[in-house]
Image (cartoon, rainbow, N blue to C red):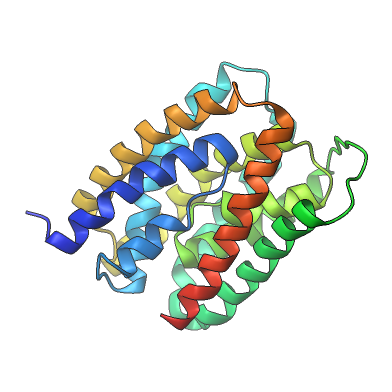
Length: 247
């Protein structure tokens, strides 16, 4: 039976899933909830969150495969870099100070959100990145996501937006990259005994259901409103990352 603090963290799984499905960001909430109210060791929180995000990644892959929202020629190179990057990140574990990585993620995420909310409105862009850039970006996202248990989109979404990739394409790629990232992160964390399969499965089912709702919401919200909502979530996520350093 789950302890009361962990039960209090379960609703976060639904919220994280909705945000991942709707705006591609939300993965931060789960490891923070597990390491905070849930009382898990940070390594256990990251690994268990990665297991949970297997479910949202599968949901996103199935749903998005039936749509035309994704440039699969971009998703392939991202996955090619993300999978080995995530394995390396999981194996590195505590070799890199977690606070340094989290601070970097906070700066990138918060800066991207604030720039979009407060900066000048650029002309709409729909940039297609070259394969080597996508492979390198996927590897960086894999390492960072595995170390923090954030699933992938937390880092990928602000970077792609900053590079001029279309918003809906960015959200879709962020959702899809979860699967190779978290599968590889779990593979790297499993031998260390950090994955709580039972808790991660419960959270994953809740997050998967939330992702279905989020994906449906994304199709009904106007692009301008969705972009603003994404920027707000990025700002909140960046502040949350920064705050987690002090915890």
